[in-house]
Length: 97
Image (cartoon, rainbow, N blue to C red):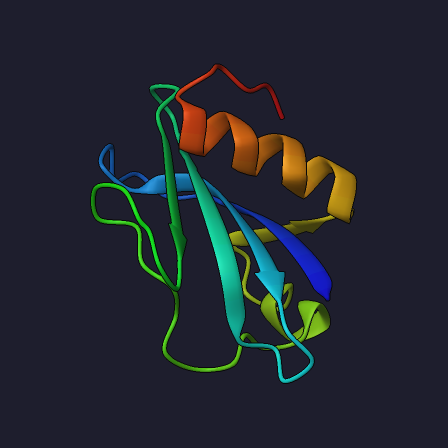
């Protein structure tokens, strides 16, 4: 598995500001956590999801490609940090990036 964490800089108050993905070998999302500016967390996997958070339908581009768009900031991320965010999202507990 690979893990990707991307800050999304935008002015939409309803959109997520942090995207965290667990990716399979073909770069498809297996699980995803979205963090919103108001502190809400959304999550999605093949068998469960919350609110409007959904897994992507296409493979996620490489981090260097995402980073070429100035609205996205790619950050270091690992399985342990993803798991903490995932557990917070599915349980409704607070999480701090």
